[in-house]
Length: 272
Image (cartoon, rainbow, N blue to C red; front, side, top):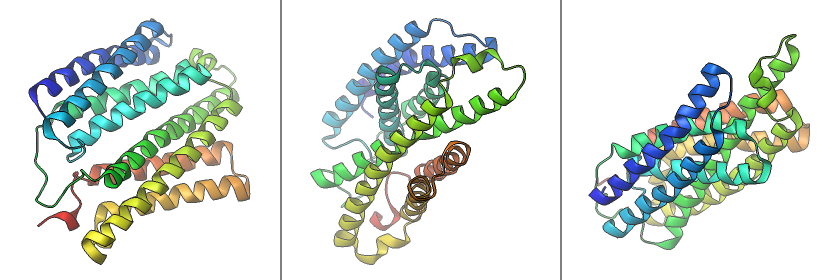
């Protein structure tokens, strides 16, 4: 990363830390404090985060998704934007308890990265290939909210069944609202990931032949896609909702996280 992009990313991390503090205080003290301040800090942080990404893209002359650190930065930014969009639409403050720490950790990982030039022949300058990366990462950002909604659903259900629900229970959205949020983000994320896999698979076959099939990242990506396909099918055809869908969303997120962790930014079939 360039020096200026790293500077802006660290400014972003500082602003995101207020969101992390808010989440920790909410969990430990069981009460929400200064949410509006944390929300403003996160929103301003998203602006500086975008500045960092644009600055890095301009400095390198290519879309900054070549390394794990660069992808962590972009995923963190997209999850932040997804949260702000959902909050603007639904006003679910309790989502922040799960989203803010995730965004902080992703940005912290990104801020530790250094510039790494991709191997010869690895170019993301083509618009359709850049679109492939954007579609997949946008899909993962949406599916992160599916996971968060699923976890919140399980917590809310457990609190409802208890005879003495804790204070945090009263901050959570109703079960029906959480299930609806999970379904909407699942539908958006699944479509985006599907389009991303189609475009990426077509390019890989044209450029690299059949070798792309054995790449571990792609294999895991298709396993993740199959899990989310099963989720969509179970909802539409079988009528699975509520607890079953929530558990399914956790399994899918773990698979997606593993896919992202295994990916170093360069697929094995692209290496010389």
